[in-house]
Amino acid sequence: MLDDHSKALVSYRMESAREKLNAAEDLLEKHHYKDSVSRSYYAIFTAARALLATKNLDSSKHSGVIALFNQHFVKNGVVPKVASKWLERAKLYREQADYGDFYVVSAQEAEAQIQSAKEFIMEVETAMERLT
Image (cartoon, rainbow, N blue to C red; front, side, top):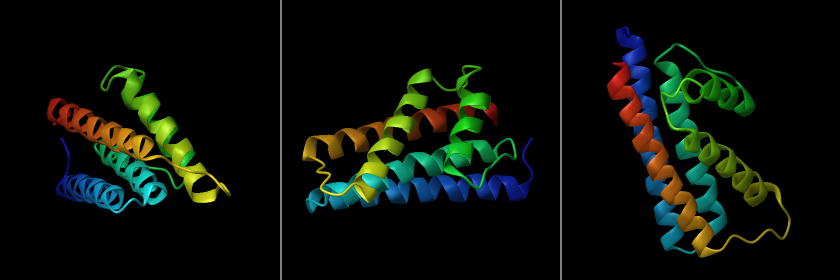
């Protein structure tokens, strides 16, 4: 059972994930596809950190969060394996969008990342319902 601090942290992170998803959608509407992809990744990443908080786990590195997420929630079937793929792909897109010179993100790619973020967040919420 989660203590009050952990519950508050999980709730805060999930709200933050939804806020980042909304920002990704707003950026898509304004044709800022690279920034939309980045926000979609952070929506997924933050939802993953929310789920990790249910077990008092976290990492200061993105790769550490991903490894912990896979170890504690994907490997044992708490979330489907596709969630790991959404997270890894979103990270790759975000890195290319944020750091790749001349990297172009299409509207379709940005839309696909938003859809992945929505599905990832739904899977995390479903997992949380089972865990708490």
